[in-house]
Image 1: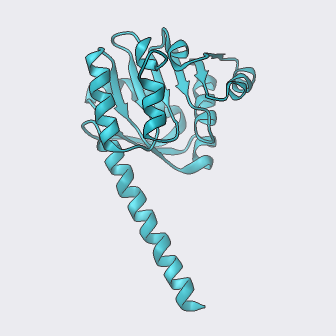
Image 2: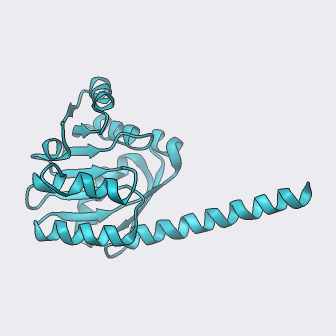
Length: 194
């Protein structure tokens, strides 16, 4: 059992954190809307924190699935951010789809504090999160990925390290480009057919 904090309980994070709790991990959650964190804790028996820093205190691993670059910075940095209370040797796993630039920025900020950082964007949508069938593309140091992978395995069907910090986000961008091209092609075909 690992002491894990999960930051962000949207359509992806809520079920992902639930899988961790059902797998026997001790899970504390944080969400900007505190009522949602309370609902999750009532449903899964976990704890809540009023800020990312409070929720992350004492955690061996902190995971995040928030909205964008600025949201990720806000849950990581500053006096209320997770990095402020995370212990040296702990690990931060980011499941948010963000820019590779912010990933590398936060990787360095974490490294300075002795915290490991793995970028691990997910693919599979809400159904994949609910069914524990996500695909996870990871970037970061091999040893850090090896430590984080068993926890990610509880909600993934595929979890791979692609390369150094930012490689997970770059792979997710390739995925999104391929999907956008497919959608554009289908749209053009439907327009032509009509």
